[in-house]
Length: 173
Image 1: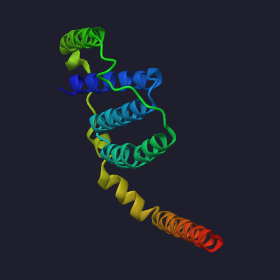
Image 2: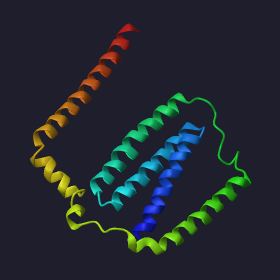
Image 3: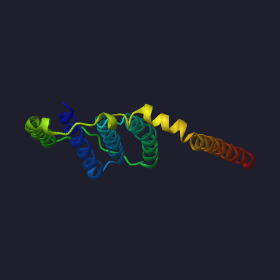
Image 4: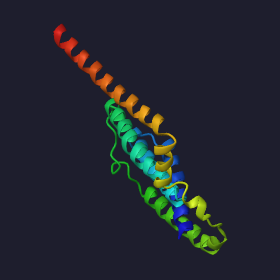
């Protein structure tokens, strides 16, 4: 089952990466990038690196991609065509062909699933949230806290600068 999930996530990651590069619509490219990041997070889960998968979804696919999407939507003022306006029968046929080929790949990989190496029990514990948090809160507690203080100071500074500009603009009027 893990082999099938790996093939599905790998093909999804490659297809969305190609879609990002080949797509002319920037908003669709960002949405494909989110799907790509989610498929990579699934690959992390298959490798039993739960912490990396959670960070991938929360930080990259969540926060950063929302910022990208807002910036692109603010800068992109051109009217985009709807997907249904440019839908053609060849897209449906191409999708069906991809499903058939992907099904054949999964069927052929069914015979080689037993040949994959097993992950050792020691390595299975490396990427867990418990293992990462144990190291982070024991060996690297001071740098972790300094980073938190630095980021908090940066947010407070950005708010103060933004308020100063607003007050300055109100006084100029």
